[in-house]
Image 1: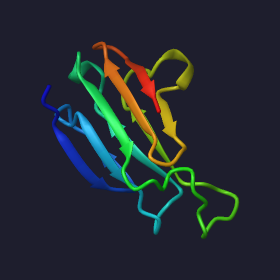
Image 2 (image 1 turned 60 degrees about the horizontal axis):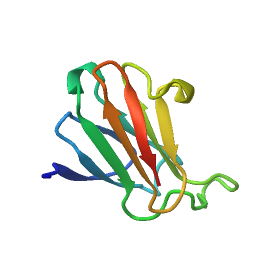
Image 3 (image 1 turned 90 degrees about the vertical axis):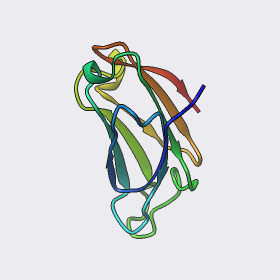
Length: 113
């Protein structure tokens, strides 16, 4: 298995169908909720994405916004991400990981760690 890996600095990252493994580095100087935008499920049929909190910042308090923790929201731009998630899933714990796969119409959540 060969994965196409990309390490990105946070706020918002727009993924391509070639980005199998995304090491997302939350930028603590910007907003508390940061995003990975996935391409349409139709354009990546059969493809999968693994999004990982690379620096272990998710779930930690934002000192500029007391009472609010940093998080990474993984958003499917077209189609749903399982029926109950309204097109997104959120990484809310340190070093958390989300693994999703496209069936050509929607994204299915395979694993949340």
